[in-house]
Image (cartoon, rainbow, N blue to C red):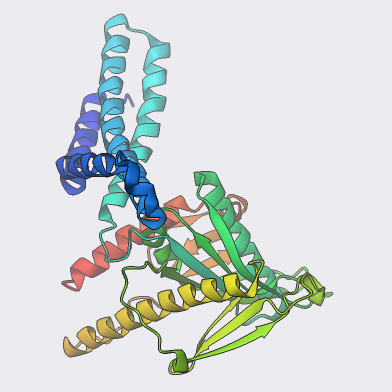
Length: 371
């Protein structure tokens, strides 16, 4: 069946109109002008922290503006390409237009999802922690598989990642790991990955080749910023120092530079060992602790609102996604029903479709709840 390019382009234009409305290009242009004016002031660099805020803000605003205007231009170019192909009855050009349409629909869909990220902390960078759950050595191995999956996802997009802490299991895999994805909207995207992940496979660690089910937990919190009002009294924190270690307990540091920070009122624990000094690890641990407590505070407030409204149902259940490698191959999100059969691609970081489906699901849930 021949592609109805006029209808497809009309739909793309409609989606882009919604994107422009939400993005508010006029306001974005005002922000760019303000940042550029401040950046041109020679005295700006007298305040290093403010200078970095201005330059990064300018870069983000310009990238956002170009992302939208560039997509508009691609839609215009596609329409011209289709007209040329139809006027000249050129099959090769028509095939090129088909390929561009497929690529453009995917790109516009991703841009549309970005406009849905309007939560209080969605624009933030993200701190992700993965912990092995039930399942012994298989769970630790699964935790490491998930760690690689997210790092490969970030690599595919060119997102900078900083590993903050890794705790290796004795036989294989990870007990836990924490890393930071420092790009705008990392939290908005990755927040839908939070929850319990389940792996079903023939265990490579079982001599009898039995099927094993194992679990890992993924926690995603927004990266704290200096403007956030989270003050932690010093008496509420217990800080232990110890030596950093690698796989199998091999010492990678001859000084007590690793830090374990415990928030006594909530029992929240943060460990940091990947920085070079105790001072750096302590600062990194405090920042992640503040991020977790900020999210905890917001979760408590949300729970109170739901209870007052008579809605005590959990919006995110256990086992939000299953990765099945035996007796068949499939990865399925149990909230959105999105599933794929190419498990290797998923573990290699191809999870954008799951993230997009998760964001759309969350928005639908919020609308249904009247949020």
